[in-house]
Image 1 (cartoon, rainbow, N blue to C red):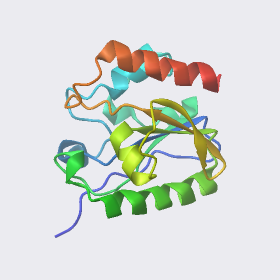
Image 2 (cartoon, rainbow, N blue to C red; image 1 turned 120 degrees about the vertical axis):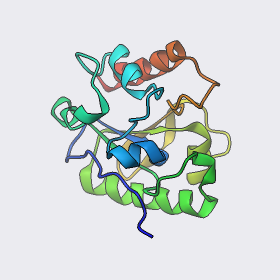
Image 3 (cartoon, rainbow, N blue to C red; image 1 turned 180 degrees about the vertical axis):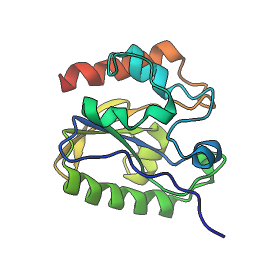
Length: 169
């Protein structure tokens, strides 16, 4: 059985490399990041000022021209992120570090507080800029924008994304 994955949207020297936890099954099926209706990534990104208009998941490659990209901690698609093992997340963190060294984004923004805590073994991490780095990239943690994450309303996500944008500028 082949594993469903989505190619990275990445280039050298990005301002921010947004890093999801892993693709959902819907996103993997359509081949675009954060594609499931109800995922709030694209709305938060636009409303926080990263994009001049609301992009659809099928327009994800336009992010590179704006200085942004997308990858995932774990490539394997699952119905829910809690299906990932601690070992998968920790291995994904090591791969993300290699990727950050290769592409050298100014910031890596991990989208998923719990996944970040497990992958990077930082159990007390809070949203925002971290003391750690990934490669030579500054590290920022944001909540998972999945519609399944009821802990954060869209406005809260937008505010946290906006803090990152202002720091990057």
